Image (cartoon, rainbow, N blue to C red):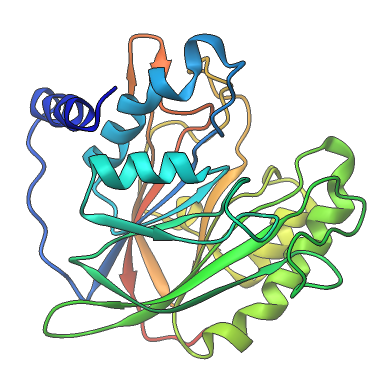
Length: 288
């Protein structure tokens, strides 16, 4: 689909869905999304990227997040997203240290946030080595992070970490060790800044990996006074989710509302995961 046509499809979808109010930079709140994009697998049949791309883009445009942590993103998908939604920019290396594989790409609204600095590390015994693996994982797993500052008269800084943990049932150890390393690196990178962690953890709330993360960070869905949509997030393109594995964790914020978005067009969904969205309020408590 040509870029101009793709942009028109997204705009028309928003018109029929209802107007989205223009939003000015706000130093008190932050709109966050975690979205597993689903890599552009040519064997996905009716769910190949070209057929679901417009729904994916409409999902983002309708939610209007300030910042998005993605998983499974390929560079070509990143190009499609910022071409259709030019208010966003994105960054990040892929899991092998280049740009030919899956990225933990972080997208942000350039009119609302300034990227101050960014980096990455691998979930292994050698975190500074691109593509490194450990603890029985069969694919490299990594964390991409960025320090952001809100635009506007009053400025607030925060750090967003984005990750995708090992996926197999037998990878419990890898997920637990990855969670421990992620937590260990929060303070050296973030200092006293507020923290957001987005990710497909491949771990349900009854898992040891989830409990480890939730002991140090707050689950934005669980703590939100207002919740919309299903709690579970992975639906395998069926629209009927069977497990909760996608999360927004935070520290130094209060969750005002959270939503698992189920946008679709007929039987077409933007991904095999529903995205998690949360509106957070900046607090004053430093990270633990």
